[in-house]
Length: 164
Image 1 (cartoon, rainbow, N blue to C red):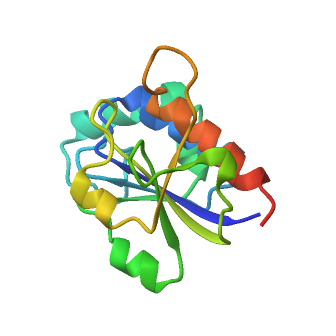
Image 2: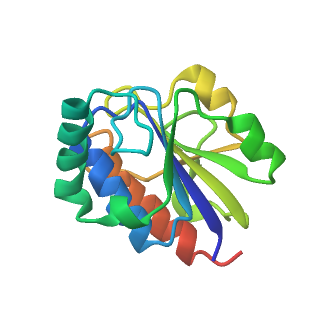
């Protein structure tokens, strides 16, 4: 099974963040990095006002159901992609793009960073350029994409069950 870190960058919804925590825990993700304007649970030494971090922590907990308390996470204003690459991780963006590989055709490496982007616009062009690979979930319905937390679960399932 690969070593996976999830980066949730600019995710607006606390419910999506909680669901990403829960799926990440279920698939054995080693850490979540919350970045940009993604809401995050309380962290020791939190500089946010107490009523803010309490509200966000409670909202995330509604869908994480405790996964946010057991899965290691950190907040970074900008994800430190260069440090992760230097540590041997392959940066994989989950995004529809000209250079995306269909998830079913992708052979995952042993050390993965799964980069998730904003709910509506996805991963920005600048962030896509930092990715080693882009993967896409095949869509057969009329909608263009899955909800980010649902897509995360689908991608983590495929990345952890593929033979390398």
